[in-house]
Length: 240
Image (cartoon, rainbow, N blue to C red; front, side, top):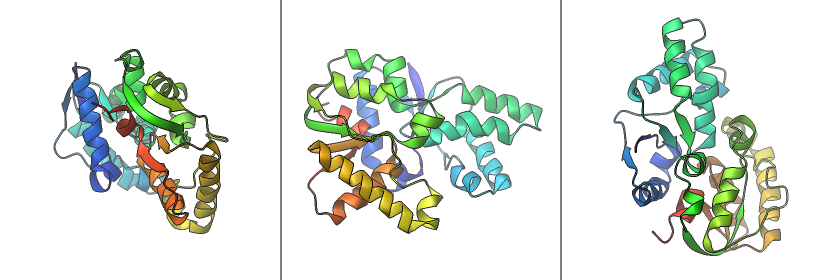
């Protein structure tokens, strides 16, 4: 199987190890991953800030770079939801681009979604170690509708004890531009999330969106707590 890998801005700039872990997982399951050159942002920051024309320009570039028939896999429920649900709306008055956006929307998948639905990774005996809890990010669960797949993967791992988090689906406070516009509220929500994580006693907290993990990581660092904050790709690829 061949896929196109959409790395996302945050992975490219801050978390390259997440992309490396994705490639390890793809190799484990015999998937050939192609990283289209020229890829940039999905346009979500501009869209959320109300700059529809700018978002449309970025989306048009994305559709050009990721042209084809292969599945597009990304380590971000937030970016996947943007492409899947917002692109068709951005081009609703342009029949040609709207059709292209609709086709691309049907090809994009968040990583855990792809691993479970297409590769049956939860049946492969992936292994890890320690105790892990999971933060359910807002866009992944509410917008993309991916709720069970990350849990199925984590609970299937040999050597890993999964511990459910209280209020796992409660926002961590990142929210993209929300974090920059309302930092006090964002930090308060992150502190509440940190309390939920510590209540589990787990040594690792994971999730499927780098933005959430960045905000959670900052909250944990302020407490000088040894809990590791890792993307689910890193957890799944730990012993590969």
